[in-house]
Length: 235
Length: 336
Image (cartoon, rainbow over all chains, first blue to last red; front, side, top):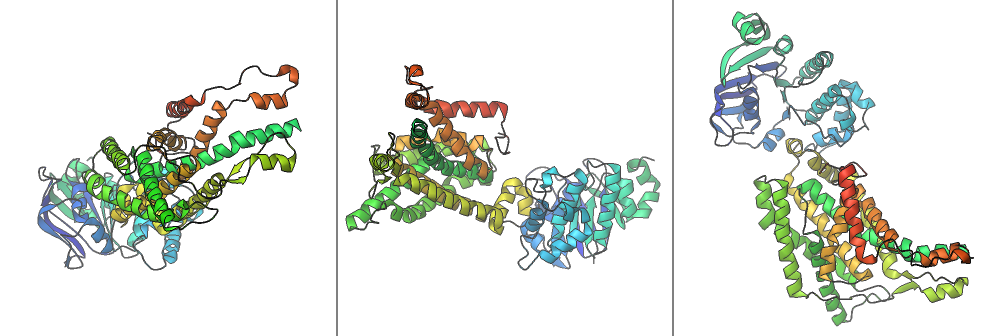
């Protein structure tokens, strides 16, 4: 049994049609797992289901063997699951340091040491600590977003398209940071459009098509699978 | 000597009254801006909530007076403020629970909430008129003046007197203290920062574990304090008339928008911008020019740019100009 797993998840938004159909995603601590697939395949939806943002019709979500299917997103945060949304993932009108403090809202004891850890993980943030996040570059904002999510010392980190809209150089840098986070024994689950680069740093990957698992395997296996290459990686 | 007289004249008729009026507007404007920033709607019931709070303070004042309790030189109303604040907060929380909560829960668009607040405005207005009536009421007691114009003239030997009302000093002092505490709370405490975060990005605030119910409650508590104190200070300085409070909503909204809506510090300064503009443009400068110009150039007319009846036109014009040329306000707020 994996550390964090969603099993046979079926559901959609509100009373709408099912977007994911008996979709299963598993991730271990210290592992990066990517969810890939064409537009509208339900990648983000699968992730949001694991975060509790939609009601499942069937299936279950477990962390460390504990069933959390019925918990609200806020209660899942308390279980150590952190989420970085694709857009609006920072408090743009607040400083870098305030963003980190807000990330630690649920941490009751002294969080100074966690902030220092984040600063050593992302040195640029220490430099910009008193600057408004709205004034930072795209790549720096994403680092703030990651940093905020790491403030609760999560065991699971979920990233929704962390590299959307950043330049290729910044993208490489961000992937480096994600690998660094993984080394701190965090289970990382991410949805990515840049499939090739994502698979390069992923331990495993899932390819979803119309809300169902189509292919799964290690990053290398998927990269080498001719059908996956043809459909999603551009030959 | 004439020059000194001119300065005293301006101090007496423009500077001190504008500073007082500005402080009263500032408290209302911060109230508007907080509700807009955190609950995300323009609260049209602002003016009437302030009159409701003031009404309760007046009722408590009368009660204390009937018991023979007074604060000596200070108005009894100051003693009534804490009780009025508590009642006001309860009233706001009840309205929130039975009216606003439903729309917030259904994620209604802000304009719908604004319409709902107009309903709350009518109801509150009616309640105030049923309880205390529409008349003009003065509830000030204690020492009216710190310095009387006549005494000042005697003291300095100048032609112009400087009158300093105790309500003016009280208004400015209480506003400065209250606003300092509020800004300290918003910028330095964890709860205050979480309110800012919630206003900045609601979804991310929820993902960070910030409890929206608590934020909403604290917002109404602060709003209740600001509305009551702002209303009572205005009523002490001038008089309490429900219709005037309703009218004051225009300069209050103008102040909040000039300062950048959603930005409390902007709203604070916006209050003074509006107050000074209103008074600068409606003051008759004849006497001032008589002092500073040689006798041959003495003006014939009153040298008044606008009649005081048009003072609301001033705030309205500022409002329109700001919305046209700088919709985010002087200090960056949200774009309307």
